[in-house]
Image (cartoon, rainbow, N blue to C red; front, top):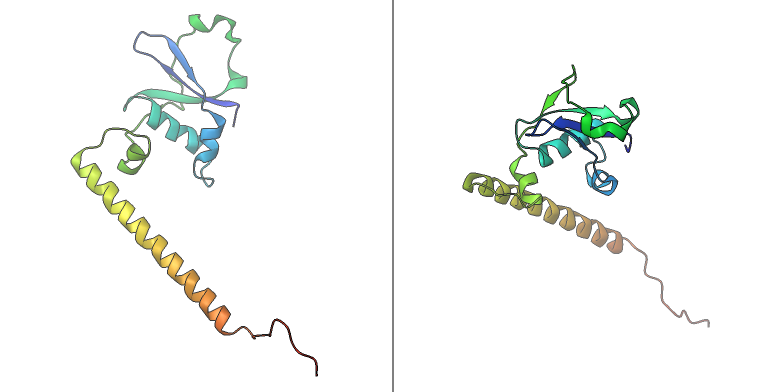
Amino acid sequence: MSNLAIIYEDENGGCVLLRAVPSFLDSLDENWSDEEKLIHVADRDLKTGQRYEIVNLADLPERRFFHAWKYVAGESERESNELGAVFKAKYGQELSDSEKSEVETFLAAKAKERLEQVKAAEAAEAERLANQEVVPANPRED
């Protein structure tokens, strides 16, 4: 993943190269591709509607003259989107009242799901113990 980055033009016309912290990328859904993880980073870190591209660092020119670079949109240019309410809450971003309600509903559903998992695990363990043969700890020999 370390060979991919986000590149975009800032409000002053400068070129910005954004590299994600590997530990943050590792914390994201393991089923997401490297590109999906960087799209999430762009949605989290860039203003909504900011145009950007995901680039391979090996494809970029020498960075010695980075400040002279100009961002030129390519055919793979994307636009950042607003994060969903749950991710906004996760990253401590401001939520509207409707987003707060959405997060509360999500958390309640997750809590209910987790409670059902715990109950199922307890029932399975009780079943296992009920079917276990009891052997005395110190059998006597006669």
